[in-house]
Structures are given as C-alpha cells and as structure tokens.
Amino acid sequence: MIFLILSIMCSVSIAHLFKYAEGKTLPKFGLFAVNYVVGSGIAFLGSFLGGDGALLQQISAPLIILGVVVGVLFVCS
Image (cartoon, rainbow, N blue to C red; front, side, top):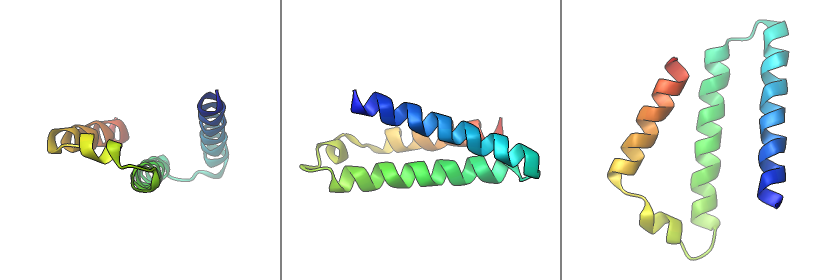
C-alpha cells in the first residue's frame, strides 16, 4: 500500500512540474531527460542498497539494452 501511495505522489508531482514548466517555457526535452536519469539513478541506488542484491542478479545485458531503447524512444516521441 505504501508503494501505491508513493507512486501516486510521484506521478502528481511530475504532472505539477510539467504544468509549471509549461507556464515558464522551459524545455520539455530537458525535463524528460533529467527525470529519466534521476529515476534510473534512484532505481540503481535502491537496488544496491536494498539488501541481499537479488535484483542485481536478475539484471542482464538484454534487459539493460531494452531499458535504454525504451527510454530513448519515450524521450524522443
């Protein structure tokens, strides 16, 4: 339940950030890129600090490539 609440809070804060950026004419590409990099960094940091490292054992090269491709496609679309 806590993860659902955190997910909702993050989604709402990102939506507010983009609404704020719309009024200030900030570049949306930069916001998407920074958002993606920060999210990836937090995910990797959480997997390193998250205990037994079971998540790190599941990460493979094809999975990383898929993540990069999906991220690039999302940012470029």
